Length: 234
Image (cartoon, rainbow, N blue to C red; front, side, top):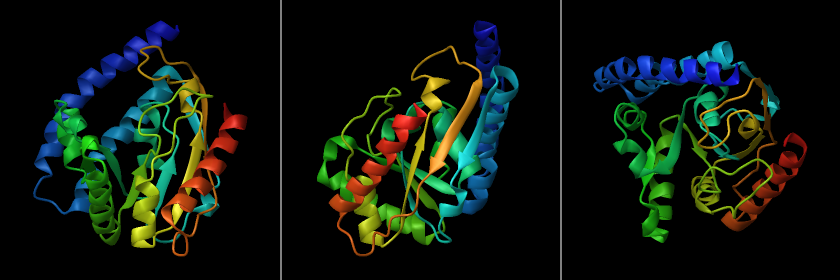
């Protein structure tokens, strides 16, 4: 049944994505937030299909910690699930991502129209400055900024060094940081075709005030909270 459900879900993605990409392209003349609300409907549809076909449900803990103004979300990254589900859980947002994702046919076209912060990781400090500059612009436009500080998907129970880009942006913009932990990788593993039914828990931590802290301390506080929650979730 797991194989059958995963196959049906993959088929649904193949059927739905190309026409939705054409709809996304048609939103080009619209304002950024309007484009976002239309294009993010694809992610909401995928999460709904994952629940109906595969049986992946989800619950959120800690919504009361969300600040009233745009913030920087620093989150664990385990699968493709959270990149879509976050669009249903959090306010309108943009992701910091590697620019190569925008080159993927159909998917990348829609992604490019959602005002992401696409960076060239090989540029080092220049990439960090680009994140800070464009991140401040997006926050001013009313978007939240989602950053996966480990830079790539990590299996449940594992961890990688937390990069400073998100903390750097928060310090530069004076924006609060929202740490997020979850266990999506238990049901939707990294690069795995087979997906298992169950409930993903997304845990939102207390916002970190970045106004009086340097990027290193912001990053450390977020990492400590996230990794402590991961021990229980995974």
